[in-house]
Length: 495
Image (cartoon, rainbow, N blue to C red; front, side):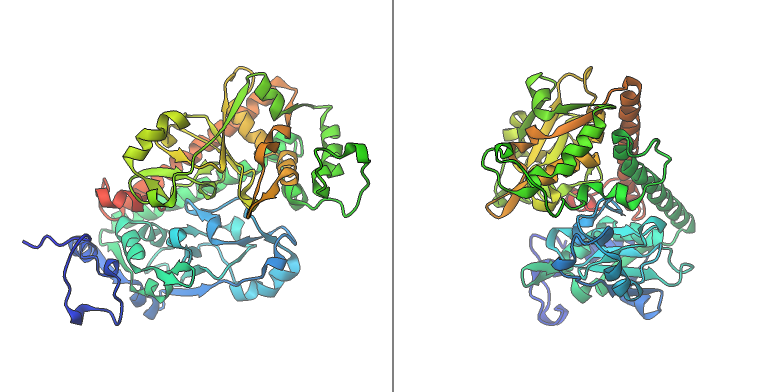
């Protein structure tokens, strides 16, 4: 009996693909799985779909760092794709002139699929472009896939297929190192898609993916409005958002202003730290909001702050337990694809020290553009470890401050702007450090409004998490499985 698996196997010299000598490229478990699927699935290489003009591909452009921050139009990078969607706040924006320069060439349309081709741990992440995402540019490390013949292959089905375990394993096997990052390169065309022969299963998959993408989009747009509503920028969640309102946190500080010498604190001479527009905005808010510092809430025992641990790169990939890093937080939730996992033994060693619970919040402390990004943990997120670049904030007196209200407050434009002003460079990255205690939270004085904000935030976040988990089940179902094999569990997280 042939017992070859990914740990050890033989191949003939004639079976080698050119000069590819990387063992994982020839993993015998992958063709074995595809063969097992052949009675129920049509095994179609992406190259065949390309030759038949069912699919077409193109890549984005590099606009250059000098273009970053010049406007509000998202420049989507590989880290901005997760959980089948583009994040609500891509960290780089460009101006209208740059957008017009590349708009026709990039030609982004609804139902295009963005697929991460370069980037090591991010390779294989994908999303479906929606009507809300078309005014964007995207970088060269992203492959834009367009379905030209929806009658032959629906884009929703393709999204599910690209997320199925057997396709994820092919992606991992075919990526290779180019310079300092990994890439899938043209090997993307070699991937074999297991398309179900059962038309009813195809229809169910298309409908389910469409439903999830649409519902998460609606809820994602609600996430954009909740902080503005909390701060009083808009009067209700149904109000239209202007670009200037949505991007208030990222707007530049005044080009010049004066500051008395006795106002300089702790020998800090960075102008943005004293941004006068922050003080002006807080003064306006004082009539409708209680302005309370994180330090005051900590001293009153309302909340506590802790940081995580650094386990070392040698621990990466040793087991199934997610090790949450700063880049694993997006759209107020953990990504479904944390890029590093550690062993059960390491988890048992540190789980009591880190003491992660539902309704704890993570706030990014270190990481330049990621500083201030936050999320709340749910019952699905308990078996994790987290890095030292994150603050874990726990609300200890929930009768005084609802954790979901705190999440909304941390994402208010005025709070995000304070965090941006207070972060500083330490070594090679930026950090908020202990200056997080200086941040002022604008808590609405109206209790009924506070309760409504907390309720809307809770319902929105939990609904999105449930939809995220359904996406994993769809990736299994399209392959005809109900539970992933042990070796596929980590790959299934990469949706």
